[in-house]
Length: 346
Image (cartoon, rainbow, N blue to C red; front, side, top):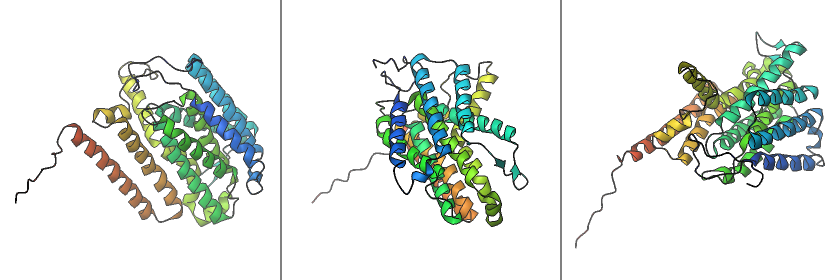
């Protein structure tokens, strides 16, 4: 609290106590220690090359930018410029979108690939930042995302003879550890928030890992074996972030229709609506974890297994989330009958 890295309570906030917001610093510290250890390990030390150096430097920069925003509440233009600069650091270290799965494989000119890389990085950063509106929500969603992406990159490496300890797998393993380690302190009631320092940091790691994976793929070789596999590295971040992206799109349309700024805050986000249905904060977080998994895991499964398996998994997760919503809805309205006591007589 002495650092001033907290915000005054606002009408749209779910918490009622002042809570520190520099959780991103702890995440960055954990990543730095992990990188130092990895650099001295024989089996995974080879992953620490030019790309991983760029991810570390860009992650450090975006974390510091977020920390300043948590402390001084920077304007949107300054944050967007900083995000673009972080993407530029990635470009300088070879982290760039090289191709797109259009009409087979479309190799991109360097300048177009650079522009798309900046747009992609900024989109993912802001999607993660946008969903950070409830205790434990962003950290849990990013953990689900990272698990799915790690599974995809590892299985892809095994099937195609890539390095299993490459940069994408390593970064996603680190992100899983960061989120799961942070979640107990961030779950409702939260003792600390990740703030913009954490949300933008995680978004950058997620986007950079996706781009790095595309650069390691021999797209022609994979396309001959399974055309679906070539789409997944670029599609997966969007499917995993489908819920926050949908919420973002709905918010922009809703506010523009009301004649308000698209950046004006309100209490009409998906998590607000789920809360009004009678779900607790913890229940809302779990439901949105499931919604994220409903898009993420079937996408990974579809890359390697028959589509019916992917559809079955998606349906099972959807039914489970629907059951939780319905149970909370019924409970909140007192429609669950109390257990009947039977008095036995002798």
